[in-house]
Image (tube, rainbow, N blue to C red; front, side, top):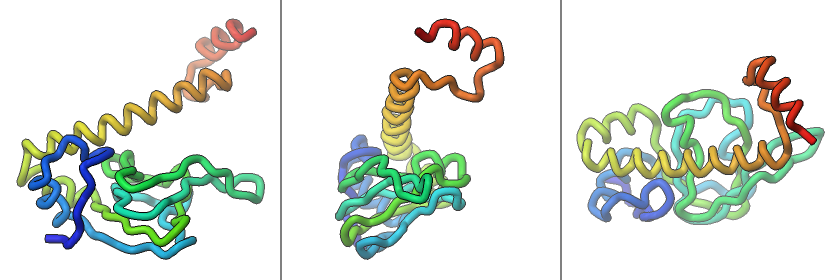
Length: 165
């Protein structure tokens, strides 16, 4: 068992205290010093991270400077997509102060799900809630910025362009 107490917030909101204690043993706790880069944009990312203490900044390097995207606090998570679909990180993350994170990879997640399927449903529900919130935020940003996503067909892009004032 890990010596970390996972917060019953964010993606872990649906889990009971005893389940959180079980889950903690499937991951790793690590203290990142202030200014440490935890995730680098465009580098392979395979972990789900939960912020236990401290504050993190999510940023995207662009045009020679770092564009801040979000700040994360205890209970927040990063890597909720990578845990299911490992790939290159879409942004970078650094510690704004000494920060403790707990993380697990897809293999340990699968082991937890196999061992505790009922509890695993609560974890997946929590991760799904985070993914849904972030998708809704992205959709609002796309709409408010009148961005036509590149994945739309030519016909759909023409239709979107014709409705733009």
